Structures are given as C-alpha cells and as structure tokens.
Image (spheres, one colour):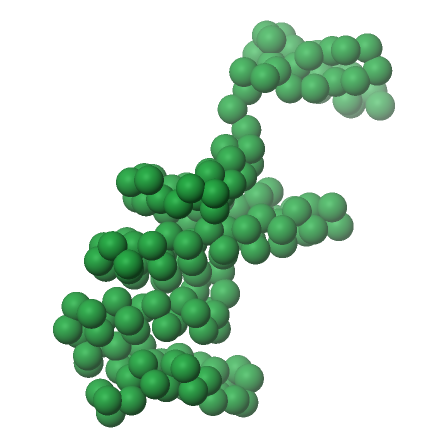
Amino acid sequence: MESLRVSVHLVTRQVPGLLINGGAVLSLSELADVDLHRVRSQIRQLCQVGLNGNAASCLHELRHADLLPGWYDDWVIFEQTRLRQDRLHALLVIARESLARCDYEVALEASEAVLELEPLYERAVGLIIQAERQQGNNASALRVFEKYEAQLKADMGIAPSEVIRRLVADVR
C-alpha cells in the first residue's frame, strides 16, 4: 500500500491533473489519452459505419495495438485475447471493404496484418488471393495459396478448404 501512495504522489507531482482522487476511488482524468480506448472506439466506428476513407490510419492503429505486451496476469491475458479478436474482426472489415473498392494495397496490408495475428486464418488468405488475382498477379496468388497449403499441412495436418482451392483452381 505504501508503494501505491508513493507512486500516486510522484505521478501527481510530475503530471498534475492526470489522476483524480475521488476519496475511495482513484481514476484518470478524462483528458488523458488512453490508447486502448482510442482503439476500441475506432473498432466500434469501423464495425458500425465502415471505413469512411480512413483506412490507412485505422489500419496502422490496429496493426500496432498490443495491450500490455509481456504481461501475463490472468486479467491481462483475458483482455489481450479480447482485443486481439476485435482487431482480427476489424482488420477483416478493412480488407473486405478495401478489396470491394479496388484498393488492393490496403486490402493486402490488412489481410497480412490478420495473418500476423493468426497465421492460418483462411479468410485472410482468401482475401490476399482475391486481391492478387484481381490485379492480374496469378503467380503471386498461387504462391500465397501454396505457402498456406504447406503451412496448414505442416501445422495441422489438413488441406485447405474447397473454397480456398477454388480461388486458384483455374491458375494451376
């Protein structure tokens, strides 16, 4: 308890107004910019209204939105998992909408960001293949499929779904 008092005292002296002491409750000032709140707000907005032209900034924020890396307390792991799932969903929204708008660069980057979080996420692989095919990069699309097929076989011992195989069937 003493170290908490010392910490609160030091923070209050170094950053006046950051902490609000409400007697039994200690909280952050509403003026404090909390990255987790900003990311969650972006995810909510993205899921409700779509991209609205801010794909690049949203993508960058989501790609680098790790919550307390290196912390392994149960409550942190739960929140990290929850944020990771929200990020996956939001990145897929960006990838799908960007692909529909023929913004292949953003679609590819968002799909690759999904694969950074979840290397065997089939929908992301499918979006990459579609983006490459729509740009006329059939060889690249086939390479993506073959890499995914090999990784899926090595890690899980299974083959890609029929849906993914159909995306490259006429290239092979």
